[in-house]
Length: 538
Image (cartoon, rainbow, N blue to C red; front, side):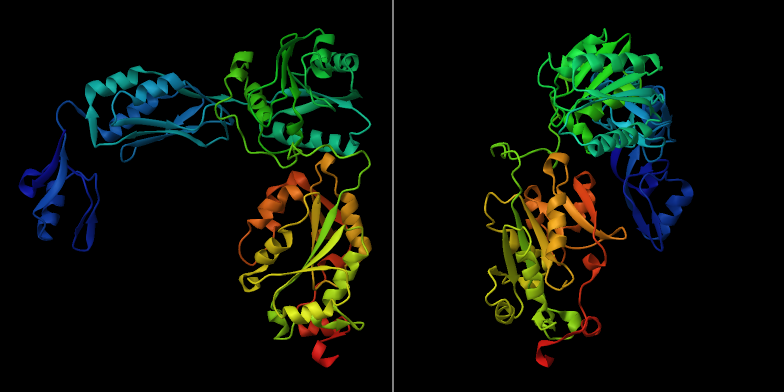
């Protein structure tokens, strides 16, 4: 291929390398310069263009891309018609992407002009998902080089999900709530549904090897294709309950542990030709973990060996899941210890919808709104009460005179609620387990409401964000585990942590409270309807 500038008289039959504006029209790159196109360019006063002249040993980019995509594709792949030197590959059905990485690497070393990119190997894909793309970078490639690339052969296929029947064994201990076990099954069913699989039976048995073995045998007899065990306690040794239970059923333990975090404590075994998975504790969360990686392969009929698991370390450091106890350096809390919860009252706003006066010092029943909220927090089991001031801080402070609260000032209050949240969280004592964030304009919140939210805070069960509701509608205040303090402090603008609730559904516990959690006072009309008065009118 000859590439470079050429006068129009020498550009006939070549391919335009760069788009050209010709009067009111644009001739796009890749256009074959026919006599009609050349005449239009000449009429527009263009005398020279950059082109690619193909020689007898060159294969046009589209033909090359289409041929190569077909050569590389295996079962379960649909090859899209090539365009501008690109041919995309799509999954024919839902499944797991299987890639011969060595062949892909070898292909991409043949010639920089010939490229093939894919999704990560063993990625789960839905029908129609683009899984790879062949791109020929120049306008043509050498015929001999293309032949070498085609000879690489099949490098990519989709192993379709098989709609397996799954047997579930769940062991019990007194500390494990039935609600947690119910949630675990529900999340497993959601994982399986994506692959067209289903749970055909569950056995909840004591946390001991013999009951686990009996349950596995029963589920195998029901026709299960895959067996999964959720232990009430984490597997920490090859002789622990779950692996010992597999052996008690007559099965084999192939591997205990995997180099994926979260997911380290996975167990892989086999029973009469059926795969058996001992799920790590993180699999009780919907977030991606090592259990997902192994489960997806098995659901697609891909054998997983101990060596396969050993090879998952590179890329195996996944995002920390918030339900994992951390930081690990903190000593275990004494049994029966109640969590220490700080109450943070946000009272720095500018009361724009009130039309000027600071609503937080408006009175209701003779008491300022901010004092009503602060006193509710003081009467609760909160370990400390901190009030964040900003707008008209002196007047808000005066409204709290005599109340045993800690007042902190937010000089950046005009930049939005997030700045007050950041000030409220800063410097809390290290032994604080959670903070409940109250809004200073919600006078219907009482101490009992605060205490009910504190009671629902249960880190051991994964209840790290406690949200009050009114007929299913979420409201305020919200209780946050200290594990979210850094995330809350990173929020920007005039917003709180609502997006964190949506991003961490597994950590959310809802408590139905009633209308009080959605009732705030923003306007003079709402204040009057509540029987209150602005401070100037009191």
